[in-house]
Amino acid sequence: MPFDPNAGWKAGDLISDYAISREDSARSAANNNAIASWKDGLWTNMMVRPLGLTNDDDKPLGEGGVYNVGFRRA
Image 1 (spheres, rainbow, N blue to C red):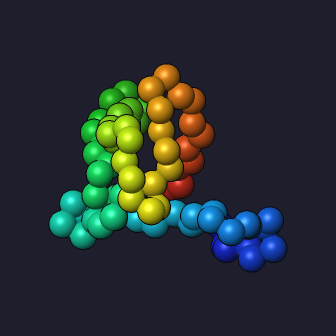
Image 2: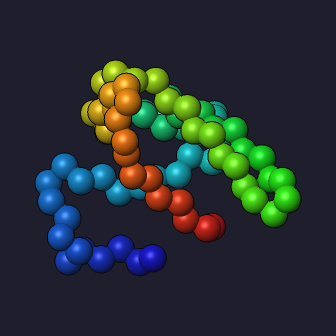
Image 3: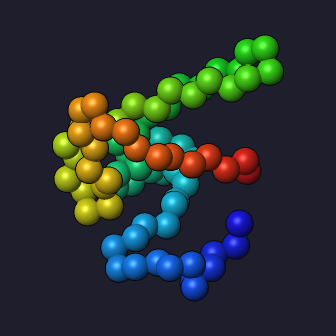
């Protein structure tokens, strides 16, 4: 989806960025891990990230919290 500068962005909002490899990741992306598998026509993706990270681009996560995520087909 193309970037829309009139979509209601406010100061502090973050735009997604992609880390293609562990070696190329930086900042909070370097703290994320994922395990994916394809079986019977379905992808299963488990994402793991520590709580309490303090990078300036981190979304604060707490134990038991519920968070929205989005996936985009590349």
